[in-house]
Length: 322
Image 1 (cartoon, rainbow, N blue to C red):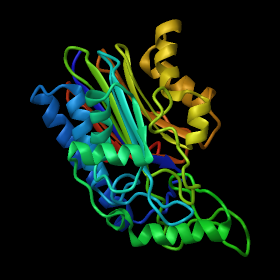
Image 2 (cartoon, rainbow, N blue to C red):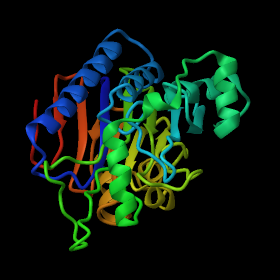
Image 3 (cartoon, rainbow, N blue to C red):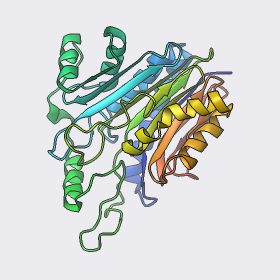
Image 4 (cartoon, one colour):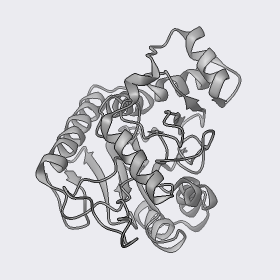
């Protein structure tokens, strides 16, 4: 048994043609955030603090679909959501419909710790944020030029886009990578376990490109996009509707609890046997310090490290940057 950490920056149709100038900043961001988490675990911080710290950092990086860099609704607005869960106590908090909160994951933790509730959304969540004095900025802070262009492409194609979906050319209506091979940015999440087997999970996102105003995905739904108990911690990414239907994060824990599967077996079963291809990826750690990072999409931006010295930063199944 030892500490372990895993994080993701979204799963989806990530083209193998993704050029270095688009790939490398995301790899470096994953490496940077992984190091933050590793240092926190080495400093004996509780896993709940670790996952919040890492996800906050991911939210602040515009290459990912959370916080600054969140994708846009059909009306060109941002609606951010997040959740966090402590496996030891099974306490959890979630937020949706945020338009001004800089770090949604921290507001989710405040919901968990400062209210009798689990989930706050939209105006109520924004009001709670102001009451708690968390950092807020005008919604324009979160909107990037890249996401304005992605929304335009999605509207022209008349569709809602999952993380990393490539635009459709109007003349052929076939899936193609855009000219420079760029990919849609992705949901972020982190799971961690300390040397005593305490677990925590956190996930944050801007949702889907061109989503309806008011749409809520899997990220803030405990048991779907985020879950932690005394066996494992899970953070999922992909198509929220599929993840909610499959109760993806909880199913990993349930397979370990009721069927006695290992973390790797349970995570692999959920991703490759129980959810439609091309819809989901997840990162998970067990109380024993094991790590699993399966996905059934083309790729998933992901990273992990364990106390025994193993570390990995990957995008596609066979591509690793250690």
